Length: 215
Image (cartoon, rainbow, N blue to C red):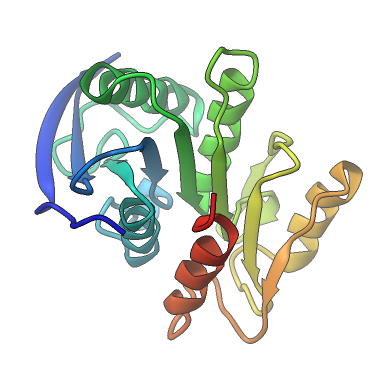
């Protein structure tokens, strides 16, 4: 693992105004990762501990990890759009990152609502010249979830790492299995874990390192 640099904060120009981001970089970037946080109307922000874990693990794997705040959070401008405009925002952040670090391999990470938005981003990138190489989705929002919300979640590539808590009280494990089944996509179930992986963040990190460290 390369030596990390101090976390940066930056304000980028997005489709509908400023996007606030946190940036974690290794000494030498060999990839770019975009990490998305949970639902902004329920306290989600780029400082969320799972988003933080995803970003720092990507960084330790040699990726420059960018964590945007969704619109309406922190200094990010614009209004919540249920994942539609948020998709465009993440694609804009990726384009900015590519202008800074070049055409490097792409990593995609997301938690809860952020994971749902990332499935939309992945669908857009799959037909491009640079589809995502590494994908990790934690507590993926799919189907009917708590708070009277419902998500029609896009399929993802077979190499995606999908992690879900056995005792997730926000997104039932059955929802994610129903989404994964038609894709014959494996889901890593963490026994005893709730939606926020209290006391189990190290498992997310270890799963990422185990999956990708040798690549």
